[in-house]
Image (cartoon, rainbow, N blue to C red):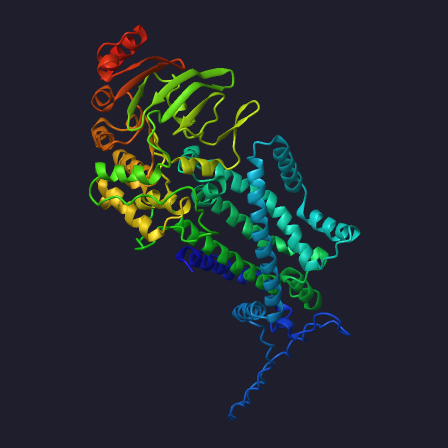
Length: 619
């Protein structure tokens, strides 16, 4: 048991022992006690009375004094019986309490209480997870029904709920024993409380984590299991542990439906021998031990999920801190395994092999085609009929003021946002859409469509998975989306990290790395899925000026290697060096586009000129 749990148990025991002398008068009526189930409990002809007090002790008469010729010795006065000492009473009461603690009759009741609590917590937590997801649903009816259940259960006494279940279920033709009724009652009650705890934990995880997972082709359930819940556990654990302790203690009210648990058995003993303090002190100590086990487990889990604690690297494991795997890895039949990267460099030959392995159709001159693309948020129209064509192997840099729709345009490409009008095709195919009577409509298996499209995205704020190391971030999608062998994926991931200059940071968590290093890990993670198209959403805007060069050097290398890229940036010098074409956007439209020397050095539109002058002034 961890040191924290031992300290809690020691303090509680010391506090209880210090209270024994103050309550010693409870022992005076019976210093010897009636130990555990050795006395009569129920069904006796006569109640087990406290044993009669011991006969007063008398001292032997003093031997006669030797006679003296002067006078005879006076007769000795009678000696009074010796009353029990305070220390004798305290020791006797403690001995009796310890006897009850190890008594099989009470321990069996404790086992029943713990079993009820364990079953109720597991069932209630699983139900709570489902309720939490329903509360977060986009369907108002589901949210309303879940809210009503939570409101009703949390607002009514649990004692009343147990009694209603005990009386109502037989009327519905459902006959359960008292133990099963208690488990069902506590589980239904716990589901309402744990759902709010879990929902709060899920909401505490940055929304960008879901977006990053979606961009890698991870579905909602896979994202919840692999990304959201592990990070939410830091917020969920204290509340769930508190609820577990409350349920263990709350099992005492199950005695109202005649569950023969610890408190009920303690009451049976007290009803026979009237030793209130010793019996209930023993029961309290047993409860304290059970709850201390939960506290110790909580401390262990919090330490395991604490991202501030460095952990040992387990060679050959791509799962790191979270070694439990549920279910099978999903393998996409239409997606091939990522191409292995040569150690130490990103070469043009490697990208050529990547393209031949991932491209199903012949080389298309028009690789990404935007036709009349529109997008609105509420009444605000963000994109107003965008028409743009990107050729395969071309690097297109999109520039413009904030709020002009640049980032939204990128998110529409791999269906991170839903299009409102027009269409986008990548290599002649829709990404997550199918034609319908009223235009395009999203398909059901959107995650599989994203994965099959092989479109990778690098975000402005990196969006690395905070609970995974650098190499675990890189291999997450290849293993759990594309079904690659873990050992091969790990070798591939380490090669990619070496290629971006981070071989020595492979086992570091994101918060242990600088911004430039995190962004390079994000680029390696994007390359791990062998993308056919790379999207960069202002990859250097969140970096210090000294770190910008690190990231731009990697992107420049990618451009020289022939990767098709759409890059949103304000780096004019980088755009001039790397871009094949520059697109300037403003107010949801394309104002001007052309070669870098035309748009950046000799812009035709006044709006482009004003923007470039502003950028030069702040450079």
